[in-house]
Every structure is written in structure tokens, then in C-alpha cells.
Length: 614
Picture 1 (cartoon, rainbow, N blue to C red):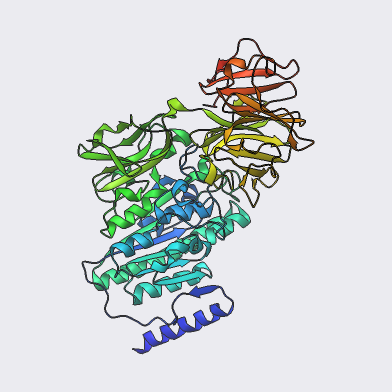
Picture 2 (picture 1 turned 60 degrees about the horizontal axis):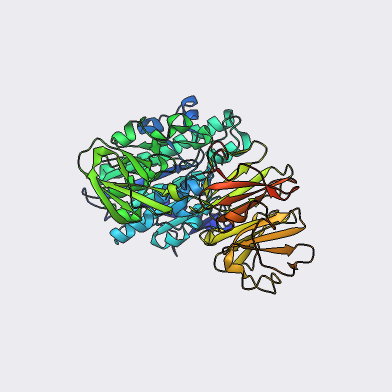
């Protein structure tokens, strides 16, 4: 070892020892001193440096001199999935980095927020894909914001060298040494200060200075790769991206679905293909000023895999095509809301294979750009289009013609103006009773983010109602029930429980027959059964009233007799009215004061009677 390299190694060892004392940096290797390696790869080697810059607003780069980022080809892109679909995710760092490292949206990786102690990615990462395809590949990862590695916990065993915590300067120093001294095939480097300054100061000089500073650090990393290429002739892909934008007004925060917060960028040292260099304007969803026609955040992972020579498999269900090489299916998404057609853009006449839930359902010319699945069943379906060695995937709820309301829940809020409807496609709609319309952005999927604790049982929900303005009860078709705390917005621990004489005195034997439930002015709860009968339950006595079940007839429920066997849900609306929803997607308005159905009902559930519900 020559004197210069010995001195460098000694400095690195001292630095790591200091960081270890304050727990800022954790290295998975038993010895942090990096020995120079003279056996660097040959000219045929493919390598990737992925630089992630946290919270760097695409539009704000124009305000700052960034000579190093300017060396790259940069394209505008989007994060946050597609609003109002299963892919939608918050524009927090957790979901953003999970998407960048897996190539899928929330509906596949399952990371809804920044709680790395609670959520782990359920999708494979580039770490796993690379190592499984190339077992001898070496992977290194640096995360200044250490929760990134925690979200990827299931795949971190594939990483050969890892650093967590510290600051951007130390991360760059470690990464440069790795580039100089190791046989790294894939190096991920996360830099955090731009986001940190944004949260502290918002837009302004401090944020601009942070951008200028990170540009210098990017330059250091670029130079290290250039030096290595000069030495070895290797083929390096350098790709730079950010995880999210920021609040458009002040720049302090992020997490919502606004154009600024959804806007990101991707930069590369490669020229890129049409997917990288051009936006698609002729897409079904033109929201956010056409942002969905730009580069998707989900394209970063497949770009890395393609450069490394790893064949992308359709069963991986990667959401977007790579940004290098031959164009794959671009902008794969639902062709129309509520339909069973998948859209993509392509000018290629090569054959495109279409898979539903990993089963081949059709093969057509790629430039046809649309496939209607006539065999789709109700529920969530993931469609994958495979074209030119690339894929694009999108999850949607199929067979909209068979939609119906499974349950309805009056919600406890100060204005008492919210109701939730649960549909048999496992989505829900938040309905504003004051405006008499569904809120924007709905339906949304029932999952661990939207209804904590309800996700595993969404296919079983058969009825729900509110109890004493504090709890919501969900009854399931298998005879169990869940208790939902409206104040903490989650299912209580210990549930589900069986409907029996201990939990619901008098309901034992009827739990799996309940198709609708109704709170009648906090005095009675009514349970409607699948055989056209109903049960009256005393809320104050917490037990079934004597003599039930009884038939739904004009004596007990005036006007409901012909529809007793068709009820699928019930909703208490206000002190005067409640609603019954029927299996043929009609509804009945019921007057509680006169105890009779209003004349002229049933009526169809449509955009006029229940805007946005179906």
C-alpha cells in the first residue's frame, strides 16, 4: 500500500470511529477501513450510481447555478401515483423512496407514510432483483435518512456495504471511497440536506444555498465515476432523482396531491429514449396540467435493471417502462374510470402481451394502445403490458357493471356531514352530506392507510353502523365483527370477534346473515338479514328486543315489503330520513317521522341522485 492510500484509509478509519461513537453512522461490515482493490472490473462491466436528492423541487433548480447537475440530461416527472386509483400515495418521503427503489406504487409496496417502524416494503427492491439475477454483483447503499433502509428491511441482506445516518458530506466521502476502492455494481447514495432546509426555512436563500451545495456534492460523485471510467473503461449509468416536491406556497411541507408536491425530476448521463425525452399528451388522465404524461417515478428502477442487463419479468408488475433502450409500453393506466380497459401509448407494431394478475389474457399489436378485458371479474385486478422487453402495470377495479353498495357508515364529525360508502369492488367513497356529493378524489381503495385494521377484511364487509357517535361497527359475512374507534381512526385491538350472545346478546346465529345495519336515533339498532327479516336491538339495554327476528313487511317497515330480500346497505342520514340501498343499484328514501318510504321510490343510483357514488 503506498503512502497516499495508507493516509486516506487511516483518515477514513478515524472518521468512522468518531461517527460510531455518536451512533450517527452504522456500517454493516465488521471492519470499516476500506482496503484499495486493484481488481476493478473490465471494460465490459455495467455499473450504476443512483443519487437520490431528498425534497429537491424541480422548478427551483432554475433559480440556482447547478453546473454539475447541468451535465446530466434532466426530465420532469411525477410521484404520488395517479390520484383516485389504487396507485395513489402520499407525497411523503417514505412512499417516494419505496417507489424509487422498487419500481411500483403504494398498492404494491404498501408504504403509506414515514413510519418505518410500522411499515416495510412488500415489493422487491432493485437490491433483490440485481442480486438474484447476478449473485456475484456487489451492492452498496448510503442513506442519510436511515428509515429508507428500514423500509427496505426485507431486502437489506442483499446489500454488501451499507451506511446509515450521518450527513451529506460524510455520505459523499464514504461513497467516493467505495467508488475508488470497491467492485461496486450498484451504488445508491441518498442526500438529505435539501429537504432538511426546506422543512426548516421553506423557499428562499437558505433553500437555494442547499441546492447549490448539493450540486457540488453531485459533482464530487460524478468526478469519482469519471475517474473510474478513465481507469477501467466501464459503462456507468448515473441516474439522479428526488422523492417528492414541496408545498407550492411556502415550501415547508409536502405529502398532499398538489401539482408542485407531485412534480419531481429524473436526470441521467445517458441520452434516454422517447419515454425520457418526450411527454405523452394523449392519455386518459390529463390531471395536474398533464403531469401524468411525463416521466413516472416508477421508471427509475426498471432503468437501472435494464442497464445492468437484467431481463424484466412481467410477473414483477413494475409500473413503468425503462428510460433507456427500446421504448416499452408508455403510460399504462385505466382507459376510463370504472371500465375494464387498459391504456398505453406506443408507436411499436411489435406484439404486446397483456396479463391480468399475471395470467395472459391477450396479445395484440403494441401500437393498438388499448385492451378491453371482457372476462374481468369484480374486484382489484392488476394489468401488465409487456412490450419490447419492458413492462408497465396498473391496478384497477374490474367489472363496474356489477358494482353495488356493501355497507354505509354515518361518521362522527363536528359538522355531522360525512358518510362513508363501501362498495363491492373493495373501494370506498367519502360522501359530503351538506353538498350532497362525493368528495373529490374518490373512490379510494380500502387499505391499511385509509382504514387501519380494516384492510384484511375488506372482502368480507357486509354491514356497518355508528354506535353512540364514538365507534363504528363492521359486520362480516363470516359471522364476525370489527369495532372501529372513530377518534383514533383505527380498528381496536383484539378484533375481529365472533357475533354471539356474549358480544351481541340475542344475535347469536344471525351474524353471518346480516346484510345491513342502521342506527335509529341512538335508541335502536336494526339489523336486516338476508332472508327478508330484521332484528331490533336496544342500544340502551345492549341486547336484542324480544320477539325478533320479524318479517320486513308493510306493518313493520311501510313501503319496504317488496324489497326485503334486496337490501344491501342502510344509512342514517339525519333526524328525519334514512336510506336503504338495494341489490339492483336503486335506493329508497325512508321517512323516520312517519315510518314510511317516500313515494316515488326506489330510484336509480346515478350521477344525479348520488353524485360520485358509483
